[in-house]
Image 1 (cartoon, helix red, strand yellow):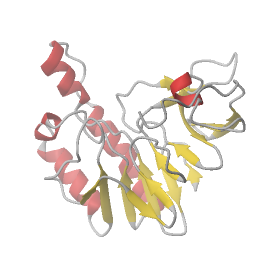
Image 2 (cartoon, one colour; image 1 turned 180 degrees about the vertical axis):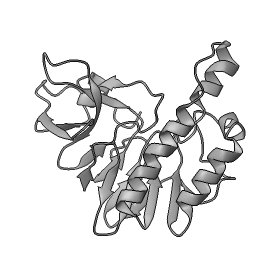
Image 3 (cartoon, rainbow, N blue to C red; image 1 turned 30 degrees about the vertical axis):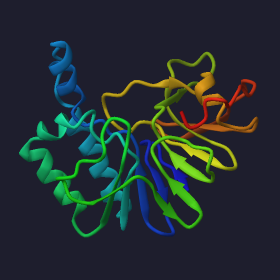
Image 4 (tube, rainbow, N blue to C red; image 1 turned 45 degrees about the vertical axis):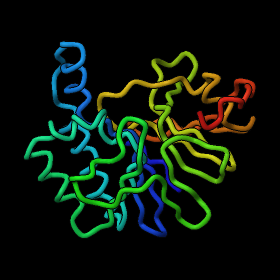
Length: 215
């Protein structure tokens, strides 16, 4: 499995591209629920990023690890241009929408809709569980190099579990050393920072309680 600098996960042998937490329609949800208006460009930016990864890697299968939309009403706000772009990206390949806690998968946008998906012994799901090996998302992990600027979205992995960063343009994040995240991994866990290039570094904070596993 290759951690791409963009935040996508690439499995070269089965030609599978995995992305998590696209959160299409977040600006629309914020406007509906709070009245706060922010530039509504996250759908286009996220689709353009996904288009570039698909063009570069040409996957046979694309897996979206849940929370593809910020809520179900966001599907209705997906305009014709966005829909046309997504349809083009789906053409000629298998597309798997995994259920997230924000949405059960955009059922009217093509593809296959499942609670989780497996490749060999590895399960792909939205939220980490006690059943490993697994690949998941949900937490939007971020990490940084001490003394060298702000935290960046990151992958976190150990010998049995991998959590992807959020791929969507308008997404916050949770520090990789937060107890809810750090407690999911063993002492040798590695973070891979996204950006112009992928940078791997150890998570050096001590392991914390894993009592919240699968919450």
